[in-house]
Image (cartoon, rainbow, N blue to C red; front, side, top):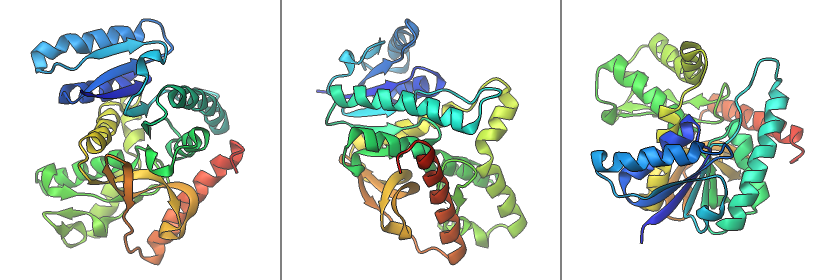
Length: 309
């Protein structure tokens, strides 16, 4: 029997994630959205690409959660983007209502699933989903550093002129301005980039990574990134369902690791069939620790606005 993956939100990020998972062939995919016809149409289009791409996955679109029952993994991408005139708190509280409702529906129909949160602000929404679901912390995580490290990897590979397969990049902290790229833990063929590139070049690549999403928004004008975010979430699904024990930077609830407790932050974890099976603790410099704590404090501020603290 195939695994079952539900993707909530049939926008560009959700649809990309659903397509990537469907193409792997190891799980049937349910695409859910409140807009009538949207998930059904996109799911049917994906299904009809099967004979071309070469997969037999069943892809189904739905406006309700009955079809999602007993999903193994649920990816939550639903939410709204910030609109003109909307404050940061307005966006937060609107997406809080959306993610809370989605989480309640997910728990009702798939009480044993693992949840991956993609909705922004990601770290706060991950902590919200954990709070609402009451799942153990290893079964609720956010997709943050997988995307951010992929951006850093792509910039490093282009700068050095090597395959991205030979580049490892480490990014901790929140998904946004408070992320913490770690150049000394980022390597090309095992060699730290601090030994390959001048400081000014590294600083430029770090700055571009931190502004990775904003750069794409400025180019698209009317939208935001979706190929890489959707693919990043699909990579996490793959690591879990295939029990790959991959070390990936994900948003997870910390319980004393890195000197932080009771707050979600992006750190390297081992992802396997149980979800977050281990938090990998890196030795940080005082400056790096301070930057990570600042990221955690930013999440705590959002939790205060949502009245979760």
